[in-house]
Image (tube, rainbow, N blue to C red):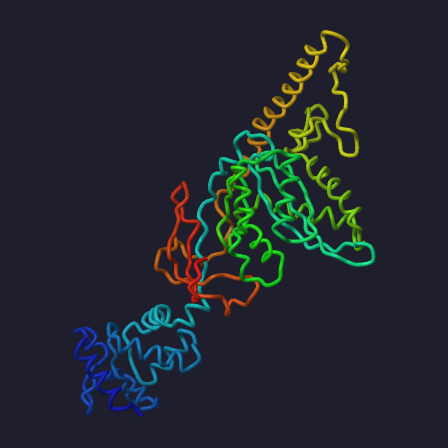
Length: 440
């Protein structure tokens, strides 16, 4: 039974948006005893209920019509367009009702919008960053990440260790250091050992530490505390090392070192299986894994035996090194250096120049083979399913924050505070404010 308030709302809606002349004739509109416009049509003699034979006319442009649609839609547990329209037509008639129901539900039903939300379409893949395609000394531009924890034996007890992985962005070489505790002091000591053996980097790229604050008692929580510690910041400032954090919740921005993390994990687990190593054994295994990974080919290895030298990351650190052999191998065509008399200085300079020639040869291969092989990746657009939002996010827009750990029904809502355009004017980074006021 319709209440007096509902009748008055519909009456005002009909007065504000009267039917057009064509609708009056086509629907047979006339007023009933309550002063409401009803549609007679040609079903007066059918066995339908009286309300369905003479449904009340609802104008498409009225807010009252939208509210009635939402009421029916929500009372039937957010049913689909066809079901909602069927329930409405038992009492009301809306011109172009299917389109009206679909538009009203899509625009105003927040639970349905949330459950059926589609992600933004990814923009075209950008150009590789300058620090990856510009010649530089090994580890001048470095990616940094932790992996672990790993259980090891320490006398009669089991302890955890973590592996600190440094990746050269140019040569794709890696350097591994292990730490026995996730503290600031342990991190700085591992970094000092890295500098002592590989030289001081100009730039370090790593995960945004703020994204790890949501976890409790995990590797990432301690890692975020370490990277934000005043002592760490001061140490890097004194060494004139630039920090560069990737955007929060965007681990693919660190793909250059995440790929190395997966490679090291695979090699480590393949080497030990289910064994429990001692710290002494781990300290030996890690450099061996480092050597094997650094000896992988950077360019395509064909079947042609006369193709020449295959470029490897280790060639830029120890030219002509072979894993498991002494790095001081005699290169074909190179004379052995013997300091015998006054010509020793000239021979030393000549040997040094030959080393430079070898390194220059490797850099030539890096430019001609490795960089050009990167161009073989012709794909510029991401492979995505249909139904993606084909527009960029805008400031002020309410979005869902995807989290693969929890079901989609529990994903957090956020408001886009700011968007950042890349060098190609595409939007790939945005600052999103969540309910607790934290900006991601």
